[in-house]
Figure 1 (cartoon, helix red, strand yellow):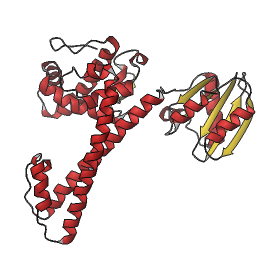
Figure 2 (figure 1 turned 90 degrees about the horizontal axis):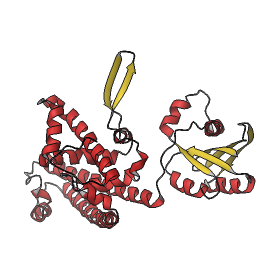
Figure 3 (figure 1 turned 90 degrees about the vertical axis):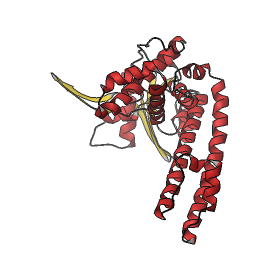
Figure 4 (figure 1 turned 45 degrees about the vertical axis):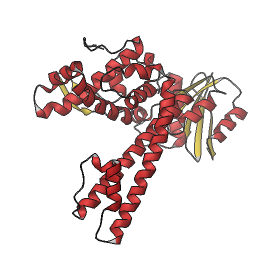
Length: 342
């Protein structure tokens, strides 16, 4: 079987092919869209082969297309490859050759590739999250504009109610430019409200097809948005051998520099999907308020000290992630009367 390394970009790509003994038999560079690489492989490689390439924004399309012609497709983790490819000489051909060599040695740090349906679901979740952030920025800009002109506003939540919106449309500002800014910001706010509403209605229909979302919502403080994001990104819970592995995947474990008797722990790694990590932190605050079990865990880590509350919140988010993965694996609902030690 041949081993093919592919360094692919939007407008150019490099291919390196090794034989069954690890010797280079062909090397080629192509200009144009990645689909030209797929066509070139169909024409010039008639022997069964396995192929690898680095994960990028188009990895899903490439993976689906290459699976139709290759015996095996491996998508490499680009962050870990940087540690392997710490070289002073780097170009597309060299990278393709190194990928092919690592594939031959079976030493590639591979990533999990979900189905096209799950990738689409994840994309919808991320799109909604970006719209919510844009809407929040819009609201903050409106408040800043009113404060700039010394306008006394309503309460934090009342300002975005129907009564608050009517008040915003009738507020008097000292100049026309400021009023035009406010008018444009209110139009943007309506736009984001309508778009988020449409996205959430679609996401709710998708969530109804996944019983795991309803299962995770039995946890006090975990809403539909957190549950669906967790289910979409975990996808197959059996790919995590231990429940503690979910913390590494979501970037909720501390950085570590250990050698001999020295063990330095730093901030969390923040690897993996940041959207899920943020939603878990928000859900943790709700769970701390509503669940005695989660509150007891938080207080045990916080030790009654204000300077440990952020540490305790991250630990609680990690705890919730382990519990949620455990529930997905076993199908058990949340039980308040006993702490699940996943």
